[in-house]
Length: 290
Length: 319
Image (tube, rainbow over all chains, first blue to last red; front, top):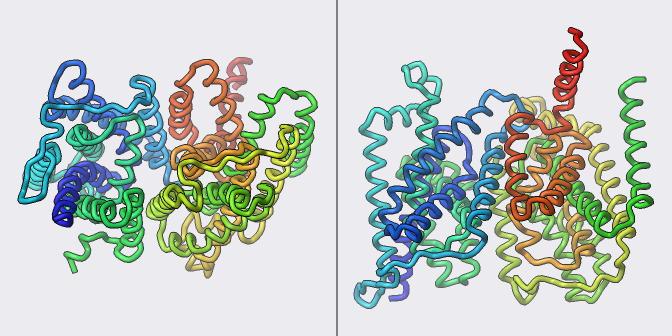
């Protein structure tokens, strides 16, 4: 029963990690950079939801629909006025854009610290500590709701990317930017929208995790690490790969925490990450293709 | 006067200045700031060898810094030896650890290398945090320093910085240095010319890890308290060293030292004037520098000179 509970909890948590990581994988696919500010965007999204809940009494699951447009706008602005500027700049290190995202991460984290102090905060709702029983396994209700909303979002995003015009343009740009430009796609606009969508997904994931996690300005680092692990696990730029990668990371963390040691649960994820990077550089997606 | 002579004289002037500063500045607080600058300059210079010249951006240098610091700390904790032995042991441990790390991570390139290093740095932090019997875990290691005279630490640190700068300078201006730059500019072209790229990347990593470990061991001796979340910190060590080098100038001899001076001075200045906003201002500054001076202050000296000269010219009404 312990095993069953561990697996289910891991999968449910992994579903929410996946949502955050899908945001990162979209950005990585189109811009070819690792967005190390992604966790900070999650953190900002969490604070928006937190403020809505604390000051206006809005339920976190509704507050996320306020956080998402806010973060979409923030993401667009960051991409357009900061990261995009570096495309033409000549510099010694090619990783300049990545380093800029580190600077953005620093600014967002410290701005949050200035406004909200370093205190640990949490949102408690009437159903925060509710559980449902499945046989002898108890499953927390916020975990369950969060997982289902995350899966719905993943599905919607998949439809958006495959069925709509903008979605197809995003995929075309991530496959081959030059060819996309020849086909008449406004690639700079698409890049901006993609960054916005990525940030909005980060906010959605953060809001879903808010009832489960403590919130503090540095919480973003945790999510940055998790989402780049997932992105590499699933294969860069692949939405479904990221969804599967998220489930795998959630599962391995949960198993590691139960059967190895609570303190080592993050090591499990990192070791898997390095192994995948070395021996399966295309991620799990390349296994499916083979 | 030709360029080489001018540079040489500037260096001599700088050394004399650095040696004479404590004659003027005697207050412990000011000396403390200078010592912090020296520690950061050592880490920055070592990172610059790998990240700046060889182009292998490492997000995990905290691993080497922490190993150096813990070598010194654990010697005192377990063997009751003076932590000063750590100055010898720390760099060696860091360099030894760099061997397998290099073997693993240099199989990867560019952003993947950066991420693998990031993951390794975090693994070290988590392991040192959880091996509570061996490392004291999050409680950290506290030692009672035998020497409390700041002047002593200043000159010791200065000596180490000089050693680091000299070693980097010699490496960069030797054949290895040219190989490293060629790897940074185009690894495939370098390979096709017969340069064993993995070997030379390792040759850059080893001294880089060595001197970062040295800075770590010195940090342990000077600050006298470490815990894994301080010395293996991702944001405050691994990432900050990159930003310090970016600020000062990537792939320049003096860039990291300039960056360290700016970082510490600004940090202290903003801490006293703006309170908790100091890191925020620093972050904004870093963003601006990366956006407008992508090669750092020392790296864009020509650009800065041109800008100021143009201003002068227009002021005097010239062309």
